[in-house]
Amino acid sequence: MTTSTLPFNDLERVYELLAEALDDLPEAQETPFLAQLALALAHRIPDLSEVEAAIREARRASEDAGK
Amino acid sequence: MRPAGRAESDSLYFDYPYFPFVRPPELDGETPRHRVAIVGAGPVGVTAALELARHGIDCVVLDDKATVNDGSRAICLSRHSLEILQQLGVDRRFVAKGLGWTRGRTYFRDREIYRFEMPHSDQERFLPMVNLQQQYIEQFLIERAMESERVTLRWQSAVSGVTQDADGVTLTVSTPEGDYALACDYLLAADGARSVVRKALGLALHGEAYEGRYVIADVRLKSDFPTERRAFFHSAALPEATILVHKQPDDIWRIDYQLGPDEDPEAAVREEAIRDRVGLIIREVMQERGDWELEWWSLYKAHTLALDDYRHGRVLFIGDSAHLVPIFGVRGLNNGLADAVNAGWKLAWVLQGRASARLLDSYTPERRGATLDVFANAGKSTRFMTPPSRGYRLMRDAALALALDNDYASPFADPRQVTPYTYAESPLTLADRDAFAAGPRPGAPLINRRLGDDDFLLDYLGTGFSLLLFGEASPELAAALGDHPELRVLHLGVEDSALGRALPGDAALFAAYGAEPGSAYLVRPDRHLVARWKRPTAADLNDALNTVLGDARP
Ligand SMILES: Cc1cc2nc3c(=O)[nH]c(=O)nc-3n(C[C@H](O)[C@H](O)[C@H](O)COP(=O)(O)OP(=O)(O)OC[C@H]3O[C@@H](n4cnc5c(N)ncnc54)[C@H](O)[C@@H]3O)c2cc1C
Image 1: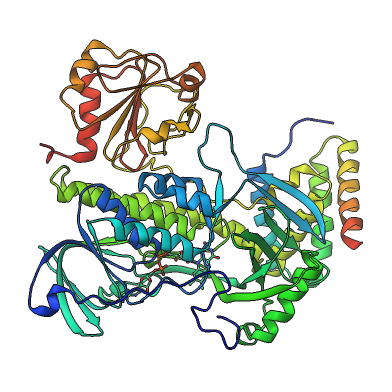
Image 2 (image 1 turned 180 degrees about the vertical axis):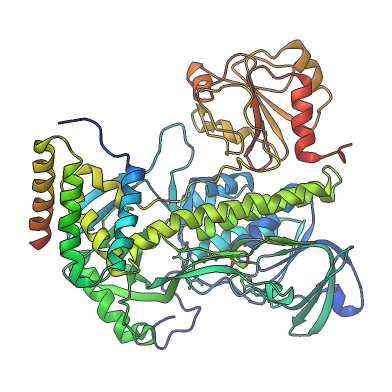
């Protein structure tokens, strides 16, 4: 695991940027947009295990939320 | 609103006082000149009256009602507000009656995902937050004002007109026994969200109304759940609504819930609708099994609206008349109390000729600055609590879902409770010249420190300016203090002092203030810092006082 992560203030900024980007898209484009974004972000992470961990976190959150 | 068959003042737990009309001298042909008039005996107006009285200024307070307000409204008082109340000498009743708290929990899909703890330590006299219904807040303040010889409260007196010129302000007051004109040097407009003074001066609030309407309901219910703030998102019982729950004294619980975007607010505040939904929340969301009774409810819309300027000539706007903020983070009332004190001491010092009239110019930058800071924070929490669009809702739910197992997402669920504003940009604040490793920055309020059992640093502040002096002062500064008899010197870490009040101060206290022997903090009457120095000279102190008080100083 690398120890450098985005500071929370910046994560919050990402939250807002994404909310606004999503609002600009037709609803049907939401899912493709998020999948494309995930690939583009993964490209910027030089460690596969980090990306795998992120996929597990997101998946776990989706399963929890679906309960 | 109250259940059918019960009058506005028919409460399950609170006895509404009745304040009679007393015929003022103006109705009998006299024309007294008042130094300060305050329109509105809400919590903010009466706090301003008490602050003026503390500084030796008489005032008259006019209110159109004959009692306190109809519902519990603002219920969370911050530590900073309690420290204000302590300076006004009324804190004990608030602490005795109120419910203090430090914690909160956030639930997502009925599972607890986050606990927050507000900063607290045994160095503090007051808990970070105390819950108390607004009727009690008003009652305790009003009863204190009634004891003061300097405050005259005029009930059942509606202000209907305001004019001002270079010398003063004239009000038109309507009473059960006729109208009269009231003349004063300065006017504090504390007449709330629908301010008549604001309209009379042709002023308007600017800003935006957010999406999202809330129902605020109080119920009486016996429960052992501790005093905490609970926020529920996506509860199975009401998946679309965000729900907030707070405990109040007298077994009263505050339940806030959001209305859906397509819901008709008029239908939602009918009694049957309230009973249905509140009952569902009590059983399914709060998981309470006991009986409950409905006490009071109202509709609330999130706003970020403010006046462009809080002062117009001889009229200063304080509280809701100057700004409307969203309820999340409990800023409405707490910021209003800070307005009242800020305007109060400055007006007193100007009226007494102890400061130049320029002191009043700092009121808007300081207090409107605080409002804009609230807007920046409240906007974020409002968008989180009541997402205004599909994108914000998706991101909010994503953050909450991740927060269940990942700490990095938890801060999204933090309620961003009110913190006192630092007047860093104020014309009264001097930026640091010396490097301090710790301690409140110039413009920030003092931090408290425990000196002993039931004995704290802030207990020793006077009504005027104070100087915290750490250890031995340089002979030059010590000599110069003789020229400032009005300054209260709190001399920390010495056994006795020829310069002021000797107080204990151990290494931990010095460290908390980043102080060395000889360091000093200059403090305003409202506990905010003017300046601090490692090794102040007589000129430093003189310059700082001149910056605040101007040349009118005797
Ligand atoms: C229904 C409701 C629910 C609320 N809920 C919350 C909450 O849950 N949390 C929260 O933090 N805040 C809440 N607030 C806001 C909070 O109550 C205010 O921030 C606070 O009361 C502001 O105090 P104030 O003294 O500035 O104004 P007010 O309390 O509005 O006092 C103004 C006073 O001026 C008097 N007045 C008005 N016009 C005149 C006139 N022309 N002549 C003479 N007197 C006049 C009024 O009678 C009143 O006594 C709520 C407000 C309302 C209305």
